[in-house]
Image (tube, rainbow, N blue to C red; front, side, top):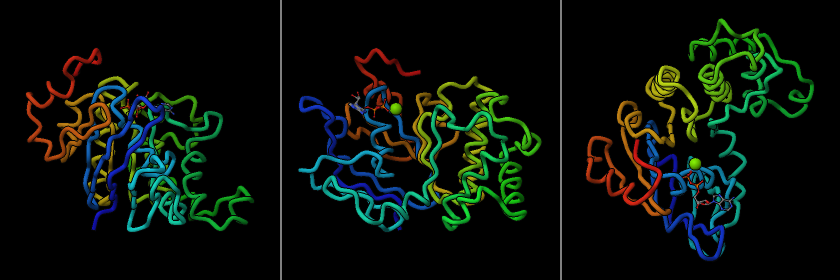
Length: 257
Ligand code: ADP
Ligand code: MG
């Protein structure tokens, strides 16, 4: 079964320019997919379509399904979007942690969507939930930082806490948009290793947009490449050759790293 099924998604933010041109993409459970391409090629826009944060053009016939449920169809949100969103974990370039809260509380927030609303309003977590959050932190190598304020962590550490939060959420799909774009090489390696480990150990499907093609090569099975909103390549990572990469970035100032 495809956990993500994108069919013929077209998006124009302005009449003159198309951000996505009839993109098709199917992702199977347990894949780790690198979404690559020059800046402005539509990577973030495609990710946002998966969780229904951006809607395709109304006149298009496209649809997006996640875990067998319709997220959007013909540019309209579908009732399945709520359940789908609960099963998608987001990781962004800017870590989106709450700086003045402890690391542990930031992870616990990931569990809110699994609670009955009345419980989430109390702001209290059970022992079992706290243990769950500590386990999630241990999985990303951050258990020792549980009581620290999130704002005191380095960028790479914050990113790993953001990943722990998706574990707490019990996300089945992680969409990571440029998770290592602002990190140094060592932190980048740790973040990519963490994503890869939970992908392999838990079978969580990961779609990650990356500027650095060498990280895609080291950690991902499959490459999907966009240029000007068009799919240029979709296949096993090792099949993405130097020629194809040169084509992908040709004539663009945003040089291939
Ligand atoms: P990437 O993530 O590959 O850098 P984006 O998906 O952010 O590319 O952008 C693709 C194209 O869509 C770009 O031309 C960008 O300017 C445009 N775009 C993205 N989001 C918006 C928006 N909210 N409003 C207008 N244009 C947008
Ligand atoms: Mg982007």
